[in-house]
Image (cartoon, rainbow, N blue to C red):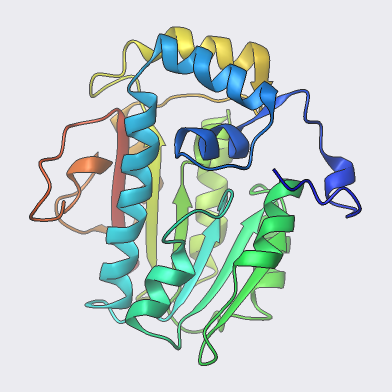
Length: 268
């Protein structure tokens, strides 16, 4: 991979410790990972082979949700928190394919993600993209910096895909969601995915334990009941909180349930 070793962000990297953004990229078939990431990725895959399906289903969910939001729902602003390394059909690509004037802000705190985001997450001339280097817990910074690109008095789609599972305390995770959703107006949306030990994910217990011992950041699963709390006060769109692979699948797909919940909800 191109490590862009002269950049200040890459100077913060620790390639000897597997990191979620790079391991996820490995499972998705990308090229932006180190030997430590591949080693942990293979070990987790050996314990829980469905993890590759989870990664790909989560990515496909993003495409369907953003396509709906930019299309039928008419949303033109997206705040994608915990974006991860760019792959195919990133949020801005899906949104601007439907509505070129869409404005997207990506948020992550991994230095390699920052390097690639600056190079690859470019916009159409009609729209805009920006990148905020911040931890998901720092909602004040996220909102302050996002406001340079987004008009927070108009509806925003807040994307929290596979990120709250790295916030181990549920009350803290709930406060992140509340902080973001309280700052956007009626007509905004929350899109969220989260791993679970339900939906056939029971075999993931050992894999998560291994991950927490050998990689960063640590991860937790939550039940459907716990995940449903993130949508308190919001209106869930059909089909509600389901395996993300079963959320409005494409007509040509024959989706298989995977152990990752997903849902989209509107702020009334």
